[in-house]
Structures are given as structure tokens and as C-alpha cells.
Image 1 (cartoon, rainbow, N blue to C red):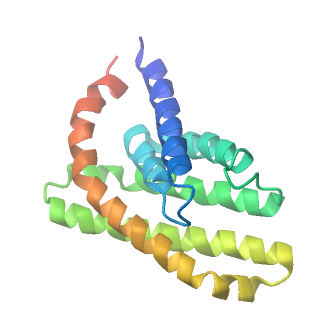
Image 2 (cartoon, rainbow, N blue to C red):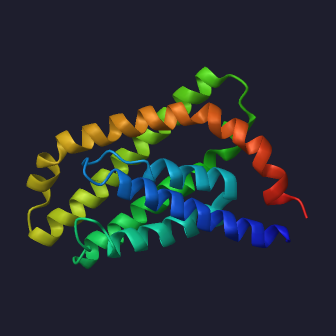
Image 3 (tube, one colour):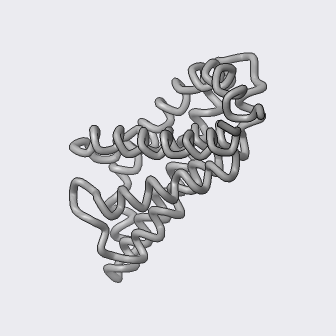
Amino acid sequence: MNYRLRRIAAAGLFAALALATSYAMAAVPNVKFFDVCLFIAGIFLGFWGGIVVPLVAGSIYILFNPNGPQTILIVGIAQIAGFMMFGIAGAIFRKMILANRNHYVGMVFCAAIGVVVTFIYDIITNAAWGYSMGAVRPVIISGIAFSLVHMGFNGLIFGLAEPLVVKLWQVAKPYLYSR
């Protein structure tokens, strides 16, 4: 199997993993492994994977959400754009993450990425939801507690994932990038 097919298969696996973990955690608001799966897809597959995996997984999740499909177009678009930010962040910072030999620094760096991208994601999606209701500021303010939980969880998970990602990269790299 050539490396392009392996990368396509890996993208499908990342999308499936993101969806499976998200469905498993559906009962807990703003606590999910979806975002970190998209981030890791960007690290392992670069910009292509950082865009394709969130686009595929996000579209499926929005249409087949356990809480019901997203029926407000602007909110769905904001969610997809936000999901893509996680994957693109992984692609942008992949060299720094994978080349880092100090896991404590790497964990803090990944945690910071998780918090910052989650903050931007929550602002964009809450603003889109507020715009659709004609009440941007009240929706953003009322979502602060949920956003803090989301940012805290993602900071923790992104940081804890760093050592595992670096180790798995050593195994995955030959399969994903050698002909």
C-alpha cells in the first residue's frame, strides 16, 4: 500500500476516533476528546489532515449529534471552522512538538495550545449562536462557565497527550511517510 493510501486510511481512523470518543462523552457537556483527536491528526498528517479530518468528523458530528442535528447553518459553519482550528494548530506546531525532548515543556506548550484554541473556538461558536438569536453578548456571557470547563479539560488533555503523541509518532512516521 502506498503512503498516500496509508495517510487517507489514517485520516479515516482519526475521524472515527474523534467521533467515537465524542459520542462516548456526549452526556458530559464541554468535556470531550474530539478536539485533541483533531489536534493529533494535524500533528501526524500535517495541514491536509488538519483540515480534512475536522471537516469530515465535524460534519458527521453536526449532522448526527446525539443531542440532535445542528439546524442553524451559521452555528454549524462556526463549529466546523473551530474544529479545523484544532487540526491546523496541530499542523502548525507539529515540528516544535515532535522535536521537543523535554516532555514537561512540551506538556505545558500543548496545554497552552489547547486552552488558547478552545478559547477561540468557544468565542466563535458562542458568538454564532448569539448572532442567530440576536443576542451575542448575553450568549457569550452565559457561556463563560461552560467555556472555562471546556478550556480546563482541553488544557489538561492536550498537555497529558504530548508524551504519548511523541512516542506514537516514532512508530507511525515510517508508515505514514515512507514509500
